[in-house]
Length: 149
Picture: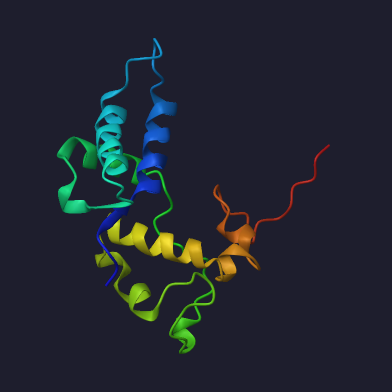
């Protein structure tokens, strides 16, 4: 089972998400979501921690983090699943057989933990051979090309 700890890089991404959505009007004032996450981030930096348990998140910060999380892709799947062919580790997305099987039961923090691992490993096809499938935005797989005039 993956960790239910949230990595500081996800907190940074969430802070940047909220800063972009609600920029400071005066250079000092922060949106409530940014402020809540910034408090957690500052305490982690002060304590030299790079992860925090999901259960230890203050409610306002957890809500802000989950608001950011909802804007991220849920699954690393690129529709090339080698675990269905008997592999212990999927060549397409990098998840283990158990992670693929239990994905829907994972919490957001557990899913992000898996995302972090496969991103750091950078060996799954989603990062090289089929990176275009994993690109954000609407899928163009199977759609005819449109000629520009």
